[in-house]
Length: 310
Image (cartoon, rainbow, N blue to C red):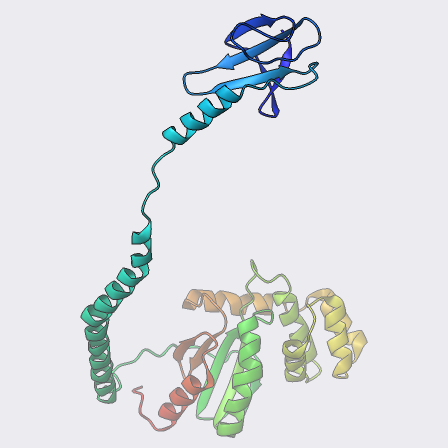
């Protein structure tokens, strides 16, 4: 069976087959073939396709069938729908939104405003609780910055690789020093997050090694101001920047001399319930996280004024 092109594509006779001779068949379909060839036509209940074999010099042509097919397609066409109602949708939506706004949003906004006013009035009348919990956190033998007789002691459990600890030391602590001066002292205790920060414990060891030469806080500041990641090379670079005697310093690093000290700080804080860094104890009052300066200022000022029960 030959393959024939139907409406511009290839098709195969699936319904009937007729042989045409001398270019004319009994039904009057014109097939101007020059010699005896096989051509096919395919009809269905709804369409009639004419086809020409690939080796014919021209396509079949039957004007009567073309007109019949055109008439059939027009009569079977679906009626055009009236879509004017679509233009009313935006208007209806806008009206519905306006009704909902005035029916619900406006009354709700009034309630929220009223609630805010009530909370503001209640906040002004809140008294400091008569009892607060103060934790017994010793200074131990950890580094202290500030006079021993300062009325405010801030004990910080911190991690040198903690970005929030860095933020607090660079942004909040300098403002506390500027405003309160010798009234506040800072105690730094190590709480390296072993499972999260691989270089936190080595950093703490390096700072303590610098402390052997009386430059703990210089090294402490060097760590928090260091721009790159921590490594052995970084520890030595910071040591050189602050003028450490490098032979003794590198020997301390090699021995990991303060490993037990760092682990003891961590164990004490964990037993106390510390779970994150930074965690502060202001005269025993717990304050978790790198809170903004205003929070520290308020607590320190209230403590200096004797407004917080002991």
